[in-house]
Length: 221
Image (cartoon, rainbow, N blue to C red; front, side, top):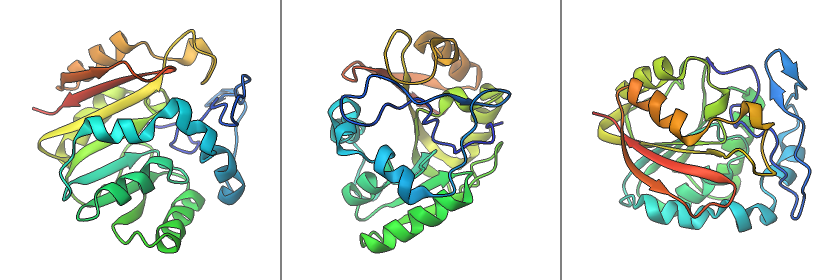
């Protein structure tokens, strides 16, 4: 189950350029809880151009090497930092931006219309179900994995929403880095691998070019 915050796991993204002090954590039962009732205001932080320097979105999309007609789900899309980039890159494909915060889904749909991206659709997910309307080739999980409860069960269930051979790309903060939630809430890459293996997935790629995050790619059976 995903804790009742925006699915993006954005806690702690020091998204202002050069910011060394992360935002407070938003974990169920501890830390601070943030509501996302003003997505336009949050967009200034989530989509700050300064984020590009360390998030390297173009390189992330390039190494995933999707065909132009691919279908992608951005799990924890929030204001669409990755969703809109995938929609531009896959003009013959389909991108589903998933969030459990209704205001974020509304914002994403409005952004897709404003930026002429008819292949981008917002989806209101549930804490234990992304509510994908059809199977996809790739599920992207950026800074969200550590928000999921019972992750092996969640990703076992997600297999039915992946095409045969479909992939899950997980990007999340590494311990010892200045951005993200407190280290106690960061999940080491080895634990991610163990949990995804328990869910039935195989590791097919591990990329090391992101300075603050691990980047692991898994394939469903």
